[in-house]
Image 1 (tube, helix red, strand yellow):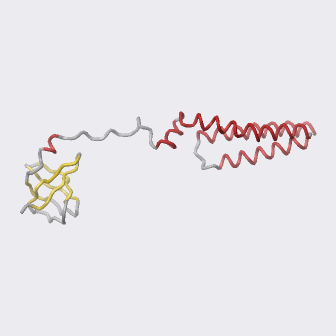
Image 2 (cartoon, rainbow, N blue to C red):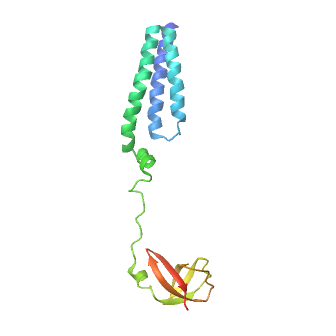
Length: 163
């Protein structure tokens, strides 16, 4: 029975290190780390029940090996897909590219049209027979009112009521 405690202690320490490794790739908000700590303590207790020498070895493995393993994982983490998402936000390769600046939209500046819907502040407008989504710059604009394009920023058209 005494040797069984040694085997249990070694197995529990192995499970604790595996849990820490899994926590590197699966975001558990520290649940696996706390579980790994509890499993490691249980492993050390089992090793002390076998003998004081093995208990001391288990304690040294946890006290020295744990921080060394964490330091290694901290260095490895930024190079994993999960680490890049956690530390840098979304993976740049997964991000959609911004829409290109449209010369057609830029040519609308100064043109007049009609509000198809109420702009409070966003609505639909018709300029040169084409429908566009637009943003009222200053105030609420009623449907049917004449509008003038004042500025185009990217794909956003800003309009004012024509006077």
